[in-house]
Image (tube, rainbow, N blue to C red; front, side):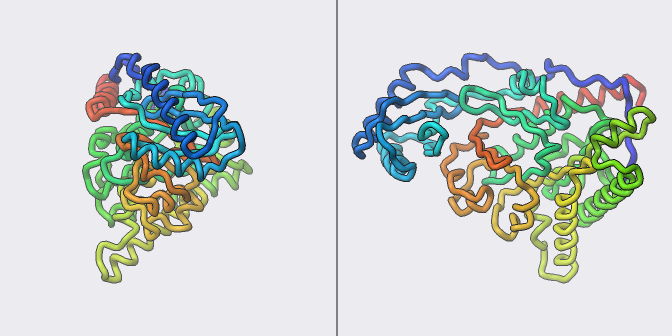
Length: 402
C-alpha cells in the first residue's frame, strides 16, 4: 500500500465546522406523552392487562413507554395488543421489547427531532471516551449519546433498504474518526462500486487515504477492489510477522513500544459501500465468479484476523439477502447497524430477529453489539458539513506547503 505524508503537529478540526441547531427540538410535549400513556393503558386494559404504572423515556424520534403490569404477562400478548392499537391510532414505529424491569413499548414521536453530528461529538460520552476508535453513532431514549469503539467491534455491518440512513451512518462514523485521530494514527480505504457515495473523500489523498500506487484514491472497479483488498491482506500478514518477531500480541502494545522509537502503525478502516456488487458475480462467466470469490475470501480473512493488527472492515448493503450476508459474514461481523428494511425476512437476515421493518426511516436505527440491541436515532451530518470537513484538511495541508 502507498505510504502517506504524516505530521505530528497536525490539528484536529474544530467543531465550529459543523452545523448547530436549536436544542428545544428534542423536547417531546407533555400533553403528547400523557395522551399516549392513556391510550396505551386503555389498549392493554381492553386485553385484560392491568398496569401499575407507565413511565415515558423520550428520545429524539421515538419515546420508550415502560409498562409495569399488575400481574405477569407475556411480551407476545402485549405486542399483539399494541399492533392492533397502532393500526387504530395511526401510530408509527411501534415495537414491543422485553426490559429487565418492565415491558417496553416504543412509539414514534409526532414530531421527529434531528440529532446533529455536532451535538453527538460535543457530548462527554465522546469527548471523554477512552476508546481507540470512538464513534458517536446517535442518541437513544433519554437523549443519551451512544458511543462505541470500532477497534473492539471489531468489524461492522450496515444494512437496510435504500435511502433509510446507511450512507449518513457511514459519514457519521468517518466524521467521528476524523475528529479523534490524526493522519499518522488512522487511514481509510474507500471502496465505492457505484462511484457516488464516497467521492468527497478523494480529496483526503495524501493524508487519511491509502491506496495502491497509480490507482484511484477511491476504489470503484471490481478489479481494483480485488487488488486493494488483497493488498490489505498482505499488509495484515506483514504486521503479524512483525508482532511475532517482537513477541507482542496486538497493535495497541506495538504502538506503545514503537512510540519511543517511531514506526507506529496507523489503524486502517476499510469501508465498502455496496458489498452485494462485489459479493455477487456481475456475470455468469468464470472470471466474474472467480473475482467475486477472491474478494469475499479476502474480506473473510481480514474479518477473521484484522483486529489484532488494527485493520477493520465496514460493509454496507441495501440487499440483505443470505447470498450477501452469509453465515461467515454473520460470524465475523458481530456489530451491526440496521436501518429500516422492507420485510421481516431482511430484518432476520441482518439481526437474527424481526423488527426493523417497523422502523420509521431517516436514521431510525437498531444498533446491535455484544449481544445488546439498542434503538436510536442516528446522528446526522449533511453533505455540506462533510465538504467543509474535507476542505479543512485540504487547506490545512496547503498551509503547511504539502
